[in-house]
Length: 140
Image 1 (cartoon, rainbow, N blue to C red):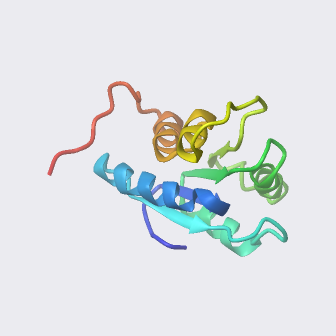
Image 2 (cartoon, helix red, strand yellow):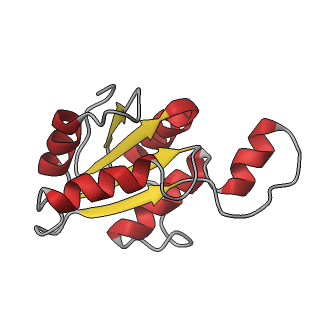
């Protein structure tokens, strides 16, 4: 765990960690401090880390540059088998879309794939019920 937060946890696998941390910075401005954890490896799953995140958060978002059926799917299966989804935990997975992405700069391709920090923020806000078009950060 790289950062402790409130009701939202972002579990990142691979190169999306910087975007997860940036998303957490911006979510704090919405009054939603987010926990950020680095999964470090997909196999074997870090069961203790996943259990901890599930037990202490209302929302868990996995972020990876993998395909559908990858890390996020394994996390969901583990949580389902453990009965962790029976208590209202909201889980969302973010991965590469099952579509061709035109060649461009890496940052543009990640944005187009919906895996940059703004997409992570939108996913979290949507999951907790904020309207992303009308949600505004809290002012100090």
